[in-house]
Image (cartoon, rainbow, N blue to C red; front, side, top):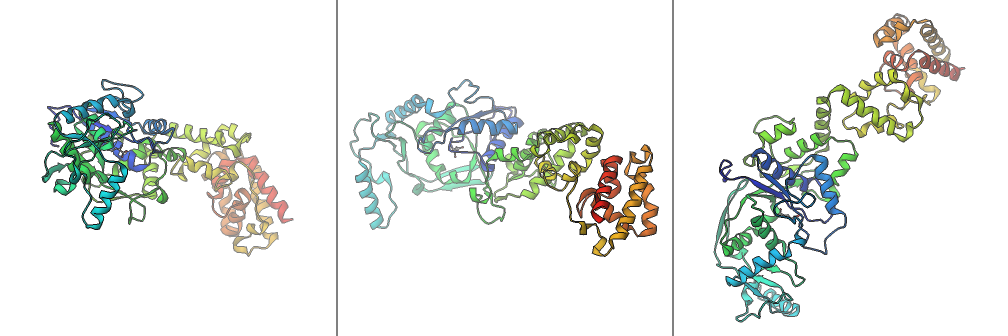
Amino acid sequence: MHTNPGTKKIVTRFAPSPTGFMHVGGVRTALYAWLTARKHDGTFILRIEDTDKEREVEGSIEHIIASLSWLGITWDEGPDIGGPHASYIQSERLHLYRMYAEKLIEKGFAYADPYSEAELENFRLKADMEKRPFLYRDYRPDNPPLWDGTTPLRFKVPELKRYEWHDEVWGDLSAGPEALDDFILIKSDGYPTYNFAHIVDDIEMGITHVLRGQEFISSTPKFLSIYEALGIQHPVYATLPPIMAPDGKKKLGKRDGAKDILEYRAEGYTPDAMINFLALLGWNPGDDREIFSRDDLINNFSLEKVQRSGAQLSDDKLNWLNKEHLKLMSENVRNEEIYSRLIQNPTLAGNNKLDDKPFISKLYPIIFDRISTWGDIDKLVSGGELSYFFDAPQYDVTMLSWKGESPKEEIKKHLTWVCEALQSGQSDVFQSPESVKSLLFDYATENGRGQVLWPTRVALSGRDKSPDPFTLIYILGKDESVERLHTAIGLLA
Ligand code: GLU
């Protein structure tokens, strides 16, 4: 890193505009800035960039705060907690931008824009006709009026020259004077532009490292020319790679699944898995490790290892990582979460199986095997793969026939045998799937395993895929199993 962490405290910031929900792109920027600060015992600041009042969406700030809080990305200074540079909301800092604007006017690097919209439009048309790019600096007035705040204030680029700068991810970059222009610093509505405001804030807040997306690279010469006009050293820049849609061909947009980050919470992903996933979207430690705890990420993260090429979003990868993180949890914590999901599931409301603790305990590993997110539990039990554990299954009687070939009489005979065997079984038989198996297996082997075990399983689960019938009997218990077998026998009559 260019800034020696030993001598200068690292200060990073996340500076979202309150224009709607946060998706993976924004959150990843926040995460990388947070990791950079945490790794070097630095400061991480949350700043709200709300100078474009037209694009503002109500509730965005609360949403940003909720999203970062869910992920455990904590800030040391911000709009809700204040700090030495409060306010952390740009619209409450207008006096500061004005102060910096006055400084630039004094130094001769800013002027009041004397032109009307119509005049500017004419300049643009003329440039178009002459097939040259339109630049404000070609129309600098000789004697600009005094700036009274009712017209835009424009920057006067100090020097038309090539700028060279270093980017922690991209290496050495440069751009010629064509990238420079007299852009607006303060609009006629009194609000600063992004280009100006973020620089003032980064200076005032002592930001040492600016991490952001690729869309800002082309404006960097403009930023550098402002720093130069102010006579202030610019921060370290790190440009993050784009996040690509799952097809890997284009940048992720809302249509390709750039969804609200809080939807992931609703779907039952864990914050630890989510930040592990986001960290790997554009960074890797240089080896093939993929599972990182929060502390691992803080210790291993470095801007040097951020990649340049686009990072592809993959739901499969996220699901896999989430499962890996669930496996790292203690069994107790996992089971508590499963139970709390079960009791909140509306289709199970009032189901007395939920009060049967021994039954529920036997079900935990079966559920855990089949989920990658907590949200999967709802899918499994509400009419899904495991719903039969809570409510007796409905199925077509033809399903009881092994490969559709067993005659009814024969199925009935086998089910009756199984039913009687269970009824006469002592309680220790029902203590494990293995002991249930030893009760039934010899009979099944003698009479054809498919012929006996298939209809038993269907009678218990109503499904062609389920855990084996011994496990089903073990979990459902003697009485419930016998009852379901009776129902099946009745259907065959
Ligand atoms: N407010 C800008 C945005 O939301 C932030 C860019 C930056 O980090 O400088 O895109």
